[in-house]
Image (tube, rainbow, N blue to C red):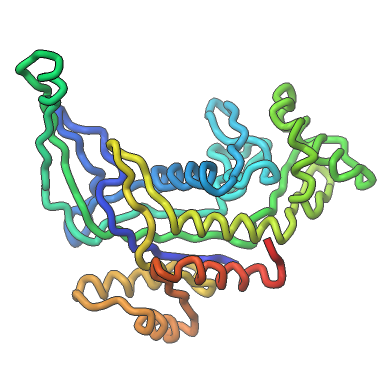
Length: 317
């Protein structure tokens, strides 16, 4: 099962390009309709992970240098971020492909070349100088479309191919300890004190030859999905001394579409200058024998509860 979605986000510049001379550029992309501004999936995800850790109780993932790349390590047991974000390089011993797919956030309106002229004259005057440094900063404000998908069946489920002496008669605590000792080796002390607190998250650990299959409880899986979606509905990103709003004012979800095809319907409405409504989106989905769930910022959390309860019925987080 897959949950797809499209967010409509109204905000300013979310992340910038490398800059040209004394010009701070915005990230831009050329499309058939003109030059659009975008923000990268990486900048969005980093803001999201930080929000989840600071405000929603998520643990920071274990981090190591594996294959020459600094990245997440450990398992889905100890880290919600590892569960959704996975690892970066191919086939590490704890390989985890992402369960949370995210496209670029691309603006609906074109970049028109707005430029902001800035100096540090105030500070220079305080320092007793009459000269100031100058910087030109490209500016933008508009509506971004952000498509995404979540493989809900893979939340809280992981397979690891490592050699470790585990038997079915081992207690759950011993199984978890042996897995982390094999994965982390000399760095096992990073997680040792947390093993007991992780037990309630795990439903089962099965061993098949050199493959270890981990499955978390449905309550834990439901809690993680709900928390992720709630954090996406209350998100900002710090940039240039202020926080840019990344909260969707209009969101569309579906448990029927394999990809957010309804993004095309949304784009068509904006091209024509027509109003985007829940009725129109529902009628569009019905032509494909599918359904969508529409949420504004006012009832966002209520709709998220409905979605999560459809995916994980009869389980309380």
